[in-house]
Amino acid sequence: MSTELDLSDIKRRMNGALESLKSEFKGLRTGRASVNLLDPVVVDAYGAQMPIAQVGTVSTPEARLISVHVWDKGLVSSVEKAIRNSGIGLNPVVDGDTLRIPIPELNEERRIELTKLAKNYAEQAKVAVRNVRRDGMETIKTMEKNGDIGKDEQKAHEDDVQKLTDEAVKNIDEVTAVKEEEIMQV
Image 1 (cartoon, helix red, strand yellow):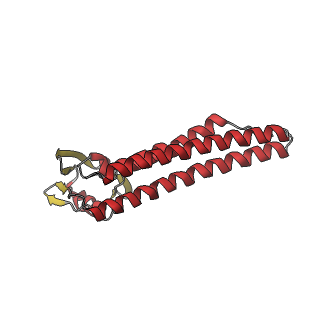
Image 2 (cartoon, rainbow, N blue to C red; image 1 turned 90 degrees about the horizontal axis):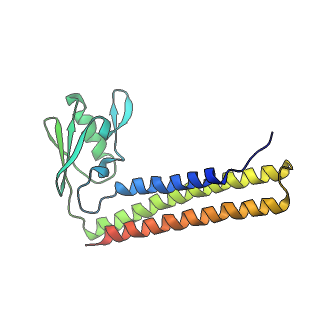
Image 3 (cartoon, rainbow, N blue to C red; image 1 turned 90 degrees about the vertical axis):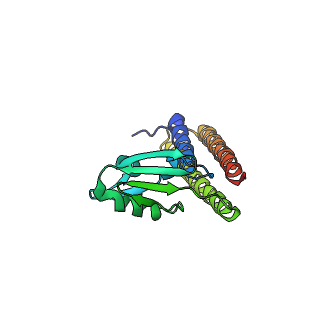
């Protein structure tokens, strides 16, 4: 059985960690209402965990207000509970089958809290990249041990994987710096 190193797959998986980070960052609020703020919220509905967008319509009728029109009246309390317990610091107000979620002005303390959360998300993305790197390195070692490649090729492949890792970490740091600056702007 021959093991093969696929650098394009490694790069794709590392880019996936970056895309996941960007998606997480969409949920970090910067003082303006955005439907993406509720992306990380999952609702207990019909015996399963569902994204909020699958149980209602999320919209931003005003710059500082998010509205969630829940399709099934029986799920209104579940949606409200999911938003309150999501850790994003929002308190919905129930109005029939619609939840109105005011976006409070960000104070300095909350901005610092959000930058810490952004750094935490970035660190999770870096861990994911390092896991992909580890998998790639293990594949290379296995290939060398099986005699599929020589020591020189092993070193060259390891250098390629390390370059991809360094590039991915650099991209994560850049995206994080931009998001932190966006959060801290008054």
